[in-house]
Length: 322
Image (cartoon, rainbow, N blue to C red; front, side):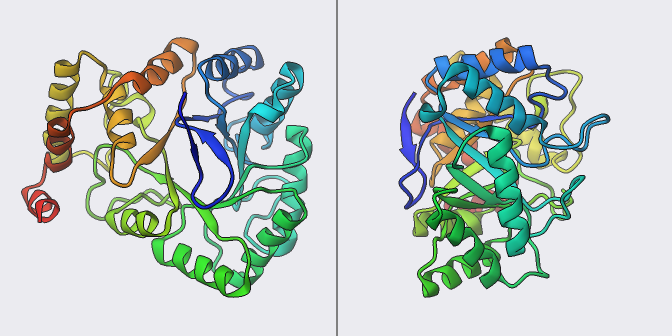
C-alpha cells in the first residue's frame, strides 16, 4: 500500500486509514484482531482511534478501542510498523472533556497506557473548546511533542477559521502546528443547514486552506455506514434530496463502467480529489474491509472525476466549473 507523509510532519502513514470506533466493543476481540490483521497484511499502517471509543454504547465506558489495539500490537509485536492516531475533546466517564492543558496531558497518558506504547503518532483535538484559550491548547500539544509522547497533531471537528487561528498562534510561538484535519466527508453533499451535532464536514473553504498550507485532509463517515450499498441503510436525512439523487445516479454509472462497487468509487474519488482526501475505512467483518481495501486498485479517468464532481445542483455545478 502506498505511503504518504502527514502535512509538514515526518509521520508516514498508509494511503488508507482503518477506523476502529467499534473495535473491542460492538466488534468482539477475536473479530477485531482479524480485521486488524487483514489491514496490516494488506499494507495498512494507519489506525485511527479515540480516547472515548466506545463510551456511547451500553456497557462501555470508553477506552475499549485503544485497549484492544494495544493488546493486538503487543501480541503481534508490530508497534514499530504502525502509525496510531488518537483524540481528545469529548467527555466520557472519568474525563470532563475539553482542550485545557491539564486534560490534554492527563488523557494523553491514559491513551498511551491503554495502547501500551510510549508515543502517539498523531494526536487530534477532537472538538472545539471555546472556553480554553487557543494558546493554552497549542502550547500543551507542543509540550507533548517535545516530550516525545506525540509526533504530530491534528484537528477534528473544528471550523476552518479556528484551525487557521490555532496554526497562526502556534507559528508565532514556534510551537507545532496542526499537520492533519479529520472531518466528516463523503461523495454526497450535505443539505443546506444540515445538522450533524458536534461533527463538522469538509467544505470548499477547508479544502482551499489545507491545500495551500500543506495540511493532510482525512475523511470519516466516508461510506455513510453502508448507505451506498445496503438496502437496510437509507441515505441519512442530512444528505437526502434532489442533489444527492443526481449524484447517486452518476456514481452508479461510473461504478458500472469501471466494474467496481459504489464504495470503491467513493474511496477512489476522494483519493483523486484536489486536494487529495485520505479516507478512513472500516468493516464489521473481513469481507467488508476487503472490499474497501480493494479500492486502492481503482483509478478513475479524468472524465469520470469531472462527471462525479459536477453532478447535482446546477448552481453548485456552475460555481465549480468557474
